[in-house]
Structure formats: C-alpha cells, structure tokens
Amino acid sequence: MEIRNIAGMSTQELMACISEKKNEMEQKLKNGETEPTFSIGARSYTVKEWDKLIDKVDRNLDAVRKEQEQRREAQEKEALEEKASDQKEFLSILENSSVRRNIFMEKLNGTYKPAFPYEHLAKNGVISYHGVEFVCDAQKNAICLGDMSDKKNVLTIPLEGGGSLMVNRDSLGALANAITMFSPEDMNRIMRAIADDNKAQEAQQEIEEDTNSIGHDASEKVLRELTMER
Image (cartoon, rainbow, N blue to C red; front, side):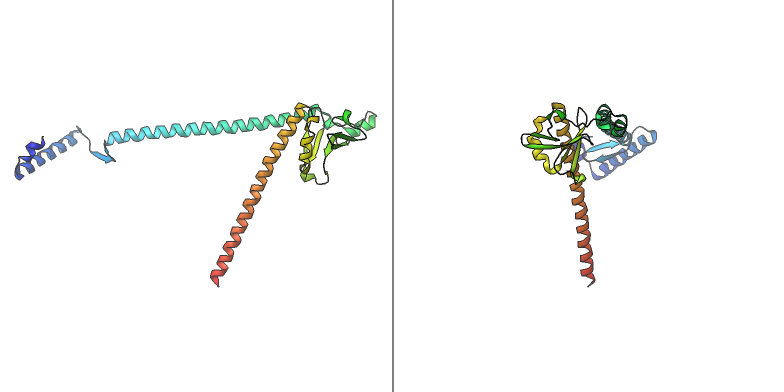
C-alpha cells in the first residue's frame, strides 16, 4: 500500500486497514506461509535464515579449530623429529669416535695409547695456537681451555674426529681467537653448542628473575597486610 493512500485515510479506515493486515499475517502464520522475523543490527532474519547463518558460522569455527589443531600437531611432530635427530647425531658421534674407548681394557691387553683431538698439534701435552693454549687430557680424550675445576661452568663439545673440546664459559673469548685451528665440521659443532648454551643460560636467568619477582611481590604483600593490621 502506498504512503499517499494511507495519508488520505480517516482514522477509522486506517485502523481497519491495520486490523486487516494483522489478520492476514496471522492467517499466513497458521498456514506456514511466512515466518516471524527479528533484527540483528541493520538486518532482519527469519528463524530459518538465522539457523542457517549460525550453522555456517559453526562450520567455519570447526574448520578453523581443525586447522589450528593440525598446525599444532605438525609443530609438535617437527619438534620431536628435530630432537630425535639431534639425539641420533650425538649418539652417532659417540659410537663412531674414540670417546667411548675402554681405556681399562686397552691397558690390560697392552694396546693403550694416550690420545686426544688434534694430537698432531700438541707439544708436551699442550696445543698453542695464536697465543691460546689448550691443555691435552688423554684420559678424557679431550683438549681443555680455561679452568676445569668448576664443572658447572664447563662446556663439553663432541668433535667430528672423536674426543671432545672442554671449555670454560669464561674462556669463550680466547676460544674465538683460536677457532680457525679447528676443522669446518668442528667449528660448526662449537658454534652451535655455544648458541644452544646461550639460549639455555638466558632461559635459566628468566626463571630466576621470575622466581625473585614472585618472592619480592609476596614479601611486599605480607608487609602491607602487617601494616594494615597495625
């Protein structure tokens, strides 16, 4: 019905028109010919339209959750595979090197011979390279740099040809000056071990800082409570 027609109606005619439309809508509802609507924002929906929209949203959410789950599983699998690969590589180093020599049995059968990495560079049990001195330890099949008394501050790095490099964290600067003494494979092992150790040290420091922060906050809370009680 056009607006100009409504404007020309009397009050009685307008009420009759509204009543007629109301009855018409009620009849359609009874016959299932139409559905009630409701507004969401600027749009109106029937119940069926709304149910359809919700179903679509649910499907999209399920798809997103499934994709996120698959991505998480893939990341976990990749991390496990990387860890397994690192462990396999380390075990391979041990098995293929003289790190696992049975020195006791070698001494018994007379085949024991002191050995350590880069033995050809040693003189009187010391390797001197660019002013940096590595002490050779045949019992541990290792070359050592820095103070070995504090084991917690010593990195032990397996080397490609067997044996290991033992270096005090405080002597990493000196190690950098002598890094060209090592083979490319050993240089890679050393740099990776130092990088991994740095990450571990940073993580440990963060844990300690968080622990100290928690303790500090707890102390402040207790102090405030005691002050309030007074």
